[in-house]
Image (cartoon, rainbow, N blue to C red; front, side):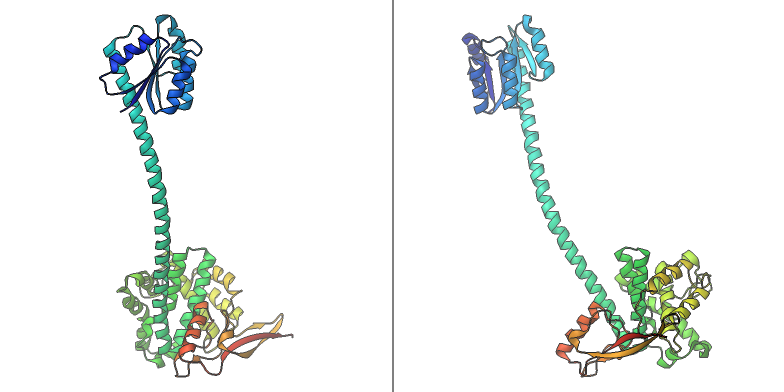
Length: 426
């Protein structure tokens, strides 16, 4: 039941209002002055106040203005004679009064006006309640979303960790099959990651290309080792065909796994050439995935630096530049050259005519002292003969953790042989 307040200094007017609205279903309050009506407006939830304009002490416009201040949602009517219409219209224009009613009034018209005003008040209150409810629900939803986002982020992190654990498992299988192939893939992956970061790609692309680099030789599992280790110039046609089938076979092996399908596509194209003379599809320039281009450059560089006839860094870069716009994308070569100058590939040949020559020595460290960035000189093998990491591998945080975990269950005797570099003056 909504409350309607009538304010007038004449008692007979207030009685008339009581008679008109006795059966209308409202809670009726009356006051004989502005100050009395203001107190009632402060102490009650008043839907509508109807006030006479001319009252001693406090006129209706002043009274309704004060009602507006203490109860903004209350609808305000002014009861006036024709002589006061100008003042009332000014009050309406300033917002203190919603509408006016002239004396004498028509009962039916007055009932209709009051009914409309009360409905307006109800709508305002319902909207306010709805707004407050919406605000509370939005706050709860925001809190729920924050919790959900945290859970999604944690779940995504676990999926990513599991994905890379799966990729590393494949890489470890390759290393068990052939430590040279496995070590090469890991070094290529480390370099490819650095080059991709140099390009400024996002984290998803970095992970994708690094995974492709780790697995780019997975198709060689099952190929006889004597063919893998043979110099390319000594291969016969059948052996070349077998090796050339590696990118396609690698893709086929990975295509059945949804999370590795894109990885397989990158691997398939890493033997393509910028000028279109590569294989298996004869792609050229921008038809080749950027990840495939990066892996191709890193792969050749690693073979030049860690292969049978090791080249210096300068010689290796010269070989890459010789393939500029032929085998390799010039932009990739330039970004790679900017990256590799700071790359620690201590297992390869180092020389510097301007500053002397590098001499490599070996430190033997306990498991507790190995750190990411160190380079293994010897294969890391447990006491039961399990190969953990091949020589030439740059240790990562994950590899250090892996070695420590295996050491607890299958100790590594004799320490870890780490490459240490010093420089002699000319």
